[in-house]
Image 1 (cartoon, helix red, strand yellow):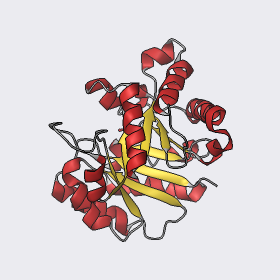
Image 2: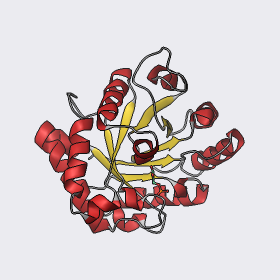
Image 3: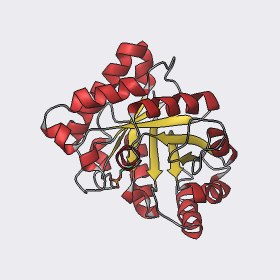
Image 4: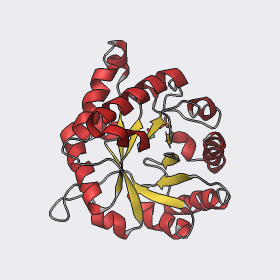
Amino acid sequence: MRGWMVAGNWKMHNTQDEARTLSKYIVDNTVNIQGGEIVLAPPFTSLSVVYDVIKGSQVKLAAQNMYYEDKGAYTGEVSPAMLKDTGCSYVIIGHSERRKYFHETDEGVNLKTKKALSSGLMPIVCVGETLEEREKGITEYVVGIQVKKALNGIDGIADIVIAYEPVWAIGTGKNATPEEAEAVQKFIRGIVRDIYGSAADNLKILYGGSVTADNIGSLIEMEDIDGALVGGASLKGEGFVGIIKRVAEKR
Ligand code: 13P
């Protein structure tokens, strides 16, 4: 089976001291949990601090973004080699906040995904429709394009994770119902199956958008939801560990 993953996207939160305390709580309280992957994505400034805490544990490190070149005059950017050097094994790519505020395109997401793979980082590729797109009834059209373009020219998906994050559910407290999420997650797996065949059955597809310890239980019961990409609720140790425990219990 494909197992589960719970990833905490801290976004632009936490100083180094806060990052140390939070990651230590998570490591200490997940020692006996098995069968899945637990990932923390702090801001760049706390990657090393968090790595010092998690190394030797089952908790893994992700960056929230990267650039697709190895080095050069790209002020403000960070390369995959730098991320690996800091202890990262994963990188979030194409988060809707990067698409919205920093004008990331599907083409850029594709370049970054390819570069992450060739650099030995596992990309967590984010897709999802806006409220307007959902209301127009074009969710599958939009998400389908995002998935196909992100994977364009990529030979295999063994080292990729996809996160479906409906934009209208992010940070709004309004999560998709398990059925709404499952419909899109299943659609995504279908697209991937069309391209990669049965390898799609091993692809982890996460749900993200206002996930909490209270609502994850019914989401994770869905066949095509293999875990969660958690924003706000990953900033509190107890709540985040609660999510991990519920996922591990049900999967
Ligand atoms: P929230 O859990 O705060 O809605 O954020 C979801 C998200 O964007 C994770 O990447």
